[in-house]
Length: 302
Ligand SMILES: [Zn+2]
Image (spheres, protein in one colour):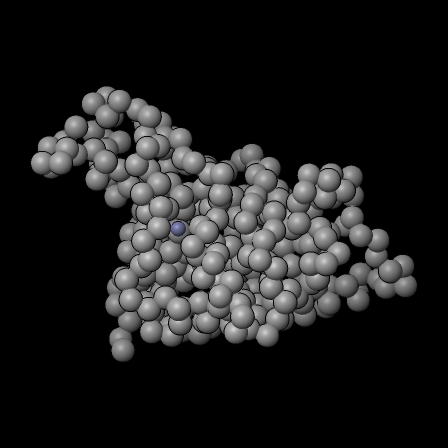
């Protein structure tokens, strides 16, 4: 079947997965947003009976560092393509002995340490406060857990992701602090992506790909840096293959219309501004997100 220009499921590929997904082919579509161009043109494809739009988070050739990724344009572009659910992936370091490199983790919590990224669509002329107690969609996580039973790798069904600004890795003191905070994984990209997905009323789940242990764990002194990098890359390839297998199994469970979810009405109680005072330009710019909340039942603008 020829791919359509819309998609139900968005897949955001991080380090490793982005290139692997692009290599699978599909139709690249040009999308412009009020927040600029996405990292790369989303690619529309028909996978396991589901229309998907996938996006390489770091762009072609892995050029965008975590601070410079156009997170708002990426989420907006997927929203514009009709996406209702996003499955994202990201390479991470493990903060726990039992989360071994090569495993997969379906994160359920996050600690956001980022500080120089645009992290909201509601930055001018309107105030919205989203609930974010459960940063990752519980329904999508349940679905991925079910899909994981058909994949032959170790999958951890919960984990707290510490998102740091980077691009440098942590100091050892920081790494130990993240462990004391209750962090299970350290990465640089799931924030503000998950927050923006919630603001755009999209379900969002993250598959974390641990590629190594963060620096809290002493390295075997007999092994030099020349040994470590190939090992990290091999772990990333293994985790990438497993993540693609997991996504394929998840898509098999996603036939038909999107599953109703409270994520799709997340803005309902979040807009705190008096709707009569929202500037027409702001209304126009954010219409795909807020338009349905700014009309009365009879369609009159509030
Ligand atoms: Zn949801």
